[in-house]
Image (tube, rainbow, N blue to C red; front, side, top):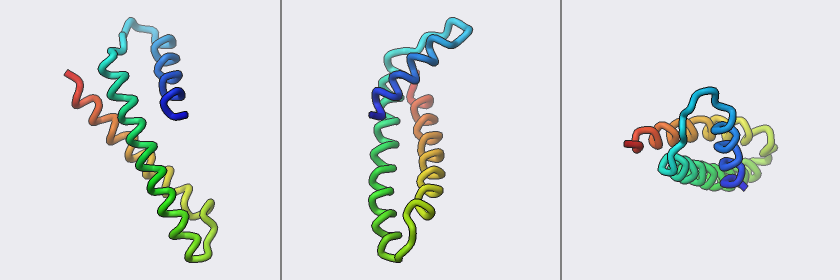
Length: 88
């Protein structure tokens, strides 16, 4: 679901811009790879973190969501920076 969602996001961004900026195929491919990496890492961390919190008899909703949101923001920013650094 992440890849179609990001493709829809890129489509809307390209249509709503007021200038004539064109998104290159290379940027879109690297962006989708970064999004896939981000989602994969977050799913792995979530699986580990929820089982860790359950073993300690805590509510995973209250304990894990803030951490996963913060990690997602950090990963998204870092991966998008890497995408821009990789572009020629």
